[in-house]
Image: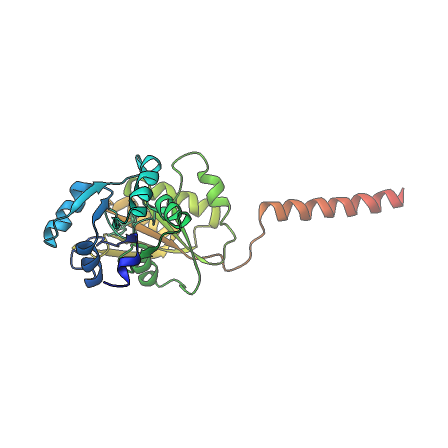
Length: 256
Ligand code: SAM
């Protein structure tokens, strides 16, 4: 723990389902820090009870994040040590944490993130889609900006990873099929590490057909193959059309 004593903030990944997916070092750190910051103190209370760790547990979530950061940094400056945990997986990955990490580093203090559970890595690796290069898109916005985000990755050659809720999956599959073409390969990784873990692989259209008849429950990650043929973007097509038209127009004028 000597090296750890220099660290003010630890980000500690917690299981995404199976409680045995906690590392020995995560347990050491949770036992050693002064305070554990938790997204939901009730959810984390269950895990800590299971690990037989009784600690000062404080709430840190997206609604109090902005307000809490400054006070926490002041406490760290006075020597208190903290571990941040989220409801599941790695804190700050589609979860609160980034603002705190940035503020702690800006104050000249040390941050350490332990390696451990996160949903997108097993989903990507088990999807069978290329994983040498990938783009983590997290959650798409529910309404405003959703189409812009999808359009921005139409020609993306790297594998795409999305977090999605079960009741929005069909809509997302439909929108992605409309933008990318229904023949694009994809995979839905559901309930990872849990009793009903399931990975369904197929084209976007095949997945739509599957989930229209098989009701979807639980948490999921959607992995979509990148664009293999470099399709022309709308702007590229427009630019090409404009330059063709300019050429045509020029030769017509020359003939006149
Ligand atoms: N911090 C987490 C991580 O490291 O993956 C992500 C938190 S985010 C609020 C929750 C989303 O993660 C879910 O909506 C789902 O997309 C994904 N997720 C979490 N646990 C999962 C699981 N066991 N199986 C599949 N997806 C999961």
